[in-house]
Image (tube, helix red, strand yellow):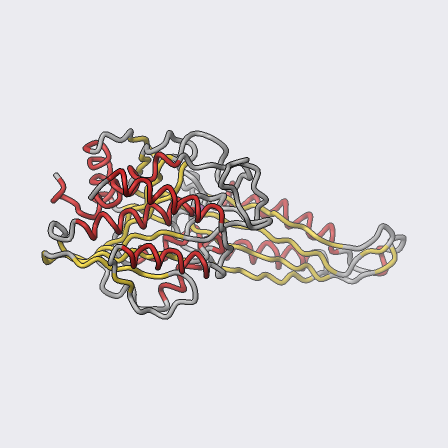
Length: 377
Ligand code: NI
């Protein structure tokens, strides 16, 4: 395989994906473009019925395990401010989380594996997954039986806190469980000058917001990372009317399964009983997202060794209570999720976030090497 050719092809593909961002569940043109490139390289696409996204397969010539690589493909509703010559052509949409790099590196990895089928043991499924930004796109893939025979899965993410091509790895927890809650406090509306005629939901909401922070400080084991953020509060329409309702929304991030259960229980108790103490009522809606991602030790160790063999800088991945729906895949099988440096710059989800294209080919080589495994050494 001519690496110069592949590099040129990947750079062109990357520019196309960057120029044509599509939001969650709308990745139709993106999916077609991926299909087109893979087909040119003779890579088989599995006949799963997915509205967006697709699964490619590379069948090794030797017997072995079934591995998967997850690449997420959706963009964000952000107005791009990079000034790049290949900036977004879609108003208000941008690949600000580097999923354009994920697609491109995934394609590059597929091409390299296809070229090395004689050395490849077992089968590899490359999953081009829609809607990661909703935290639930993985479920679209899991509705099919793609994962039924998969023994282990690899995942990766763009990392603008590291130089281009550097690999950041950590064993154990790398992303948090992501849950969302909505609390509706129901009082009785009345004139602003006669609070005694109603039940004001606003002081109730304030009391609940204060008390919720006692979950992390008083209920959770102090050695377990977790947090609760109230991110939206809304009540009332004007200055002289006490509203009947106040609504709060937010997120809970946990690493340990037991803490997730504890947060939901305490959040319900605090909201419902605080409201009751004020003569109001609280309704709690708990919307469960993905669990925490926990990297398999052996896979993480191999990853670090392989990055060193390739001569890539290796960094320890920073802990974060961010989430990724990659966690849904590795609830039942070993998995490993690594960060690949895209060049130090603006953080992901920032309108000026950029990927240095020189990291595309090394990223593809790194990923294909992970999958080829020990045979590489
Ligand atoms: Ni992302």
